[in-house]
Image (cartoon, rainbow, N blue to C red; front, side, top):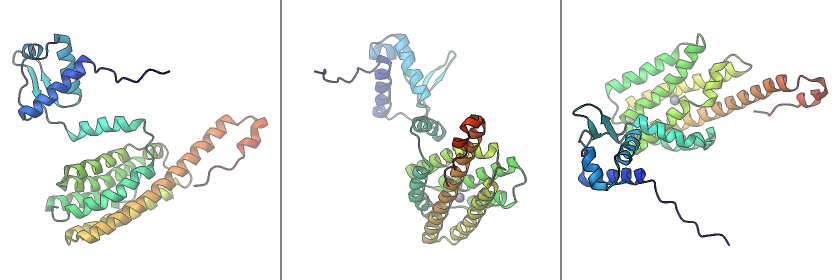
Length: 280
Ligand SMILES: [Zn+2]
């Protein structure tokens, strides 16, 4: 008979880190407020200096605490940046095998709401930033680097909306998906060799459709038309999804083709090499 599972006791330093977090919340401390000196923390928690330092280090990595050295040094409360949170969350998803379909399924829900929610909040500076992104995407791609920059500028358009959003949870989720897409394997593999097969025409279509959608969205934003912005954004993301999935299939097929050239060059295995690749 198997023994009943018992959850392991937390590491002492993890326990201290949790206690410090609770203390920050209970005391209502704000970014910049100092934490007690090391000696006071040792007395409060009854643990060694090493354990306190480990706990503070862990809170520093989480972005909740800033540690400075020197005579007036010590630990203070820090405001966790969106960048740090994005990094931590990206670490979590790194091994989850997220698919483009999953990312776009959520984008199709959230981006239209984001677009509708910022309609009355966009300032003239935001309009100029949206126009700048459109401008960058408007000139035809000259080389690999320009194409890459244009794909990033496409996402800059969406980041402007994130920055205008007054719902931090909606904004964070949308910004997180933008950063996932900036770093997605389709983009990375694509830009390693953008001239292969029908990749250029598919990238061109993705760019053209994106540009046209952004222009229409900008018009809807200027008219402060939330319903139209919501509808246009949904259509835009749904179209982008189809292009991205088609591109992923082209890239996969390309890698299969290339690996076959290497792996199946032996004539005795030629039959396998001539199998038709997966259709996109
Ligand atoms: Zn877009």
